[in-house]
Length: 147
Image 1 (spheres, rainbow, N blue to C red):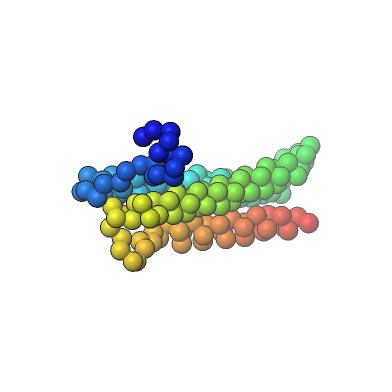
Image 2 (image 1 turned 90 degrees about the horizontal axis):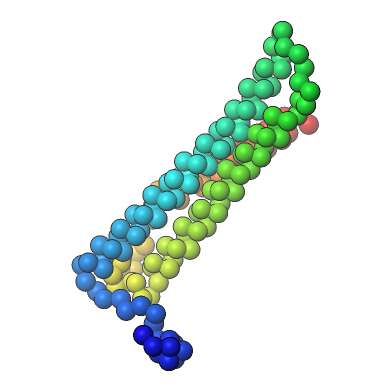
């Protein structure tokens, strides 16, 4: 495509309605799903580790035979940071997934998507949103516990 055609506003890609392009679209969609699932897995690990660190060191400090920590609030701050990073990772990954799926459902790709008028929704949205709320609950539970 020449620079003149691009400057005149012609499409950047030519989308052909074939079975090859439809299955390529499906592979791209499933690849996005796998990427979001990897982000969900990472965020769950961060939130879980953050909460566990706080709980472990809180209980360790209450046991007999241990000296008091030099910085007793350090595990709490680390736990809060890990939980916050997990929540941020979920929010950013859901936003990115949603924007790329919106692009794949746009007008030029609509013929190869084979969706018709109804949109395919994934249960991963519900799981991601539920985990965001669980993460927020964990964050505020840790934040308000020692205040």
